[in-house]
Image 1: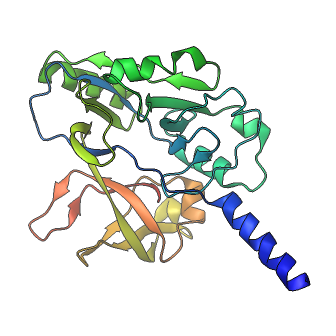
Image 2: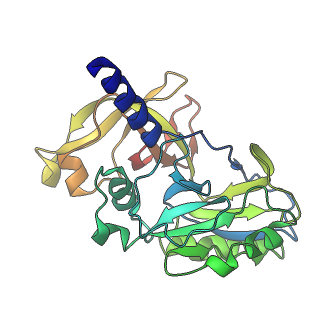
Length: 268
């Protein structure tokens, strides 16, 4: 009987931590396509969170342990968006949602910024209008602005990047909700970004002596390179662990297929 009790406890705990992995709309990269008549919004550097009507779920399918008061006024239907606090604050949000016991003080600084209402009928504006009655201090609908032409897109991109934003998202508002990576929803950035695995470290020099100076990383194509910028002093004292996957941004690839101007963004 004791053995049976343990098994039941493990199963209940597992069900509590994991849910069905959500089918999500994913972005492709903007490559100077004609996007006149589309809409644009700031790309928020937060944590993707899908509300299935009962729980907040991460992109990977893990139930996010938010305080009960945080989701108390959520709608009974699915919404998709980004848990976010402010620009450049990804580590804070990521750390807050990973805590086993949610910290109310931290969660009061987080909002859920909604950019989609999965499976709702109509165009993007009609779908987002469904969640409008539920907007409050926690649930925010991401503003969507019409794109006049490429020039207006580049102007908006420059404005938000100068404020510390990650980039811009452009979408065809007439497209129904799509659960895959689609050319009807694109991310626009001055820099590109991708992931690599940490292999080791190089010690810093000067004011960074005794700290991590750069990461030695490897991409999926087995190319190794260094990332030396984008770190806070705290991160240099406690760098990502060997084996961690990290996200970095870069401008382009060299002829040797190494990223140029690589800048650390976050641990994936």
